[in-house]
Image 1 (tube, rainbow, N blue to C red):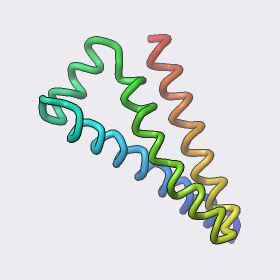
Image 2 (image 1 turned 60 degrees about the horizontal axis):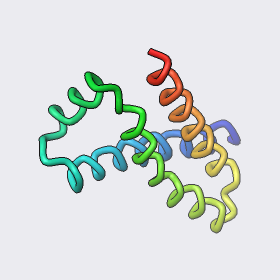
Image 3 (image 1 turned 90 degrees about the horizontal axis):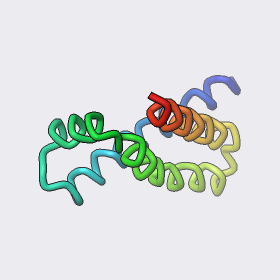
Length: 93
């Protein structure tokens, strides 16, 4: 049961991060989503876009904490850690 709550929080965190990336691209980029992501990978700033998308993880994290759903909040935190590892790997490569 606990693992299920952590997994739901993890999926929520990943979805929130992806939504944040798309929201950032739609608001601030003059290019389309595909072109922006291709340009970000080519020019090496994909990590910055992922980090800006991860800001949206604050919403479900604090919502889960407010509702006393600690294990789901842990899942969101785990998704944020995975995003940080992805940013680190993108900086190394």
